[in-house]
Image (cartoon, rainbow, N blue to C red; front, side):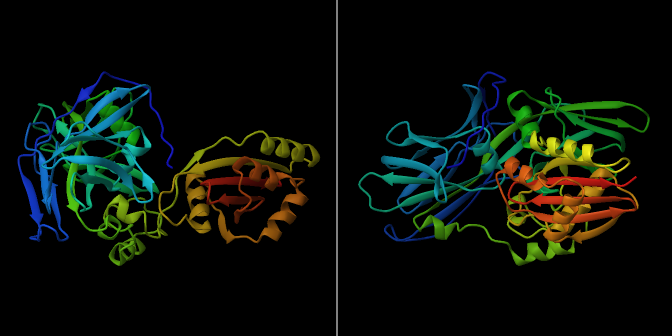
Length: 439
């Protein structure tokens, strides 16, 4: 089962509404007792801040209707995100799930009404990133199996403000430097010299420029959620004459696709695999780039092998054993010889972990190392000999005690009197960097 995370309650209940002024539907003509499927899509051009129609589709004898706007409610120390819906037939049961795992909570609220709720943070973030939520319906008096597949997305609802700042309503999940990000788009009628975005909890997006008057705003889940439960999000620009403009936008969560089938849901919506076109695109990206959005959505990219992107590192807790081993080694070494060790973590959501060369190049970029030689993978025997010569015999055991994994790969970087050994634990997303200095 997946572990649920909680988030401190930040605001009273929010009841979010979204307009669906236009629905796109497609369905198959079938016999009443035969396999059937149908899909209804949210119009991406619909304004996100106005009331509108429900999302509705029918397969076989069952019609399912949902309010596409999720309701956000404080629950304990976190929040609950709820879809409300109805059917045209009496129901005996309902269940929400993802392949091989119960997911969310589906409840009957009447003979023909239901809710499906998702919790912080793992559940809601997972479906926003592109994972399809499945909902099975047991129809009273029927032996037909009906399953709905729901896709979700965040949306921006721009508040009234200066026309110089335009905020696109659509927000898409992308794979950026190994991590999930939610990308929006800003359009300006003036050429800005400065572009900013932030929330009241001081969380902001990564801003990048597409053209002179079009920018992208990439939000973490934490930033997006901050705008949702303690919003709005804020945008500002300064033009060439020094004049500032400000505009706010609310964050909405919506059902963007409602599909219904009587087929086996695992055959209708199989586990995603890497598309050849996506893999070819990823392989053609410049080495060391971070943005994969040109190749596909987050859920399309993460199932492929990403070899051109470098991981981004963050300092991590190294525990007590590793510093103790390093202190003991330095006491035994004759100055100026000395050793340091540091632990870092990285987020990497692709199915295949980064190769050791990507790890080494990523660390060189992270630590801004100049005039170094990236030697690549190093044999375990070489590492063991080096650690023994530097009185670091217990270091690998200390790493294993830290991550509870006894498997790692080794890389090497050199520069004059300094050698770096990088111990990479792919299963934990952890590296241990050991720096050996002779001067």
